[in-house]
Length: 130
Image (cartoon, rainbow, N blue to C red):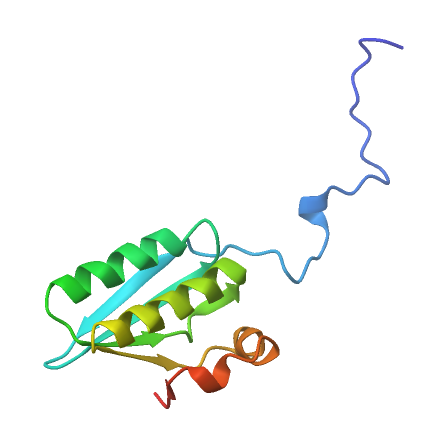
């Protein structure tokens, strides 16, 4: 029956109508920056992954170039961290050590912290309490 209108919705449920605990409106990735006298707190919010690592890398480099020798990377707002996000944190730590600067991290959620623990790099990094 080609061309017949499909107006029947008796037993049809669209994905938008289903209850999905992971669905929801998430805000886009952003980076909050709070400079202090001797340090700067950098707080990425959202997913730190292949699509966003370059933004964070550029922001931290900009802050280093502007004179901040101590950067506090606050991971509490990170919902997801993939291998590129982990690699960025390790690169930032290595760069800080090479430049005689300091990178400290504020722990993220259990999901984010698990990445550091499973890969056994948590003990290499300087985590601090907020």
